[in-house]
Image (tube, rainbow, N blue to C red; front, side, top):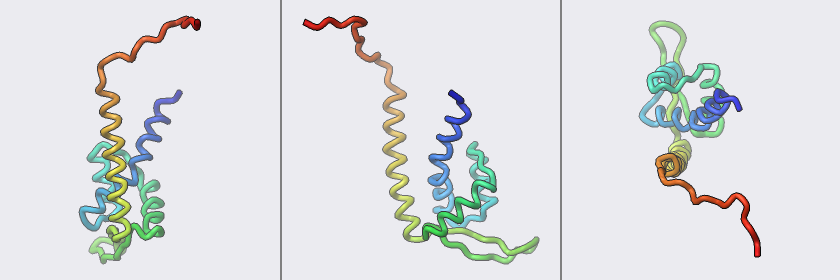
Length: 122
């Protein structure tokens, strides 16, 4: 098995939730999302982020507004819609359930019961 592939799949599974968590706190510009993800040690490329933002916008989870910039073209700032907020709440509940389950399993210290190597039937 390839550990990098497994790690990548794990990260992809939580990417949407993390991005929505950032946007939920207030309007967000994509490069700020990338910076915040990197600061949390969650690497993301803009080439991954933009398609995800577009998909969430097309699903009515996000909306955006254009803001004029002093140093270049206008910037697109994203925010959650009511539908996006409801979706986020569901993801958050799922995350908590998964995190608690994983924590319970990985923190266990007792051994599983032993199984006889050659069980006999009577």
